[in-house]
Length: 82
Image (cartoon, rainbow, N blue to C red):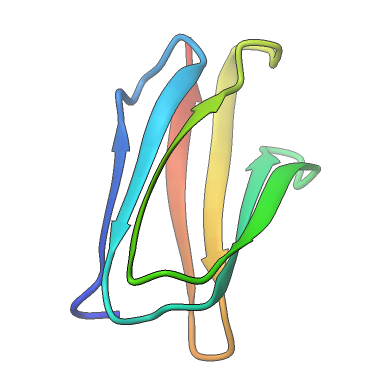
């Protein structure tokens, strides 16, 4: 966790954003949720370095949460769609 870098940009976003993860903790579930805890999207990531662009233009404006979960940790970051 100490050596893990998570970048989400642009944030706030119009709906399209890039998620970059750099760290030694390969193997975790990515979840994107709304403020009510409803699951929007997710996938399993198994890489030390990860970069992917997501398109959430179809979602309503507001606050969303990106969670990275594995056996050792849960990291949550806020994403704002304007």
